[in-house]
Length: 489
Image (cartoon, rainbow, N blue to C red; front, side, top):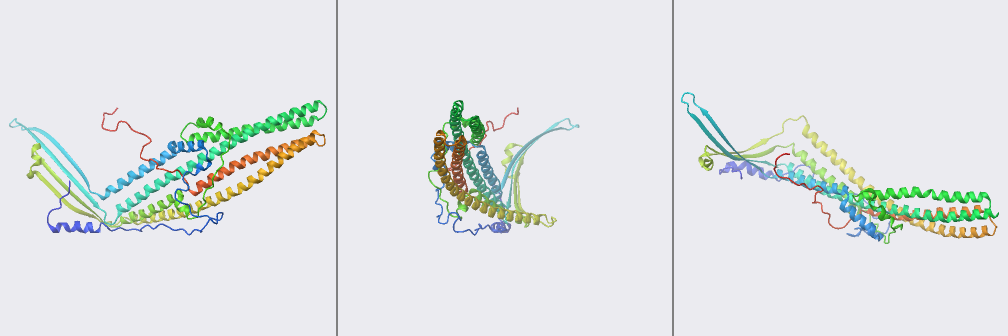
């Protein structure tokens, strides 16, 4: 019901005064911090700012359909993402709860009672009925903005939950991509080791034949056999590492660990980025990195909570009203003579609380300072990630070129060593040394390919790129069946 406050102008004075003060607010108004940042990254001196959407779906620059499919599946089914979506729903519901404090609360009630008594003198039974109905209304006026500051904090909480989801997605995408590249790298290295073992066993067989013909020594046979066995011993370690990376991907996409092992074994090609990522400028981390935006929203939330705590130091005013009707018959409830009503304001003034309310303000201020430090720390960590990823990717590409040159020369050295050995002009030790160096350099080249890809992934994460499109957070993970009143089982 709408609370009636009477018709006299004098009775409206407290209400008008309260409504006039309802626009007041205490506590600091939030101002977004502006960290002093360099114009360019140290390892990208001439870069331009990142354009909107330029980092969206950055992993597609690998041009690997399997990787794209796995990331899409992870975004849709990962359990950390599901939990982050639930936290957004929780934050939105919390905001509705807090926002309800700005409005009157109305409750209705009804009752009926029936009594029977007997008069011992007359022996007559007396029966009586009483029906009652009514409404109660209350409205706590937000004079000093306690509820509005709470609503402001709840708004920032919703935004923080949304940024937390984006942070979870960023981490998820990076984890899937990194484990995918590493799994392909382990598979490629194991495949290369198997091919090398086959060649080395052929060499050992030829050496044994030369030994039987008197053209080689028993030492040469033993070394050739040992070399093949040593290379073969690397394969189980690589297979174990491949399985661990593949199992991790299975969990990340919300399936059983071994769900994607067969899929990954179809190809041992290490993904290579086909296009570079724009490094941007330091100011981009404030816009692109969801963890930085999350820290900034938490700072805004903690600032709003100072005002919420400070408002408790001031008086509070509540308006209450009630309407009651009663009668011995249900039809009497609508009779005007049976109506009773009341209304009036009440004021609560904090007089003595042993410093509890003031301490609550100091707690909120200290928490704001913690959030302020966490925000600036998040900015520094983000800049560190970008610088490390830029220099790591650039230097790994230089290392790859050097390794590629080494592989070409070791191949030529191995070819010449076998020719010279066949002519009897050198020992078999030179052949083994050349083959060992070739295997080590080619294996290092494969590892460098993996590192280039993982450094590229690290850069994508450091710059804050993530999935494009709208993420549906409204759908709950658990859908309940029966919700209404029913008999308990």
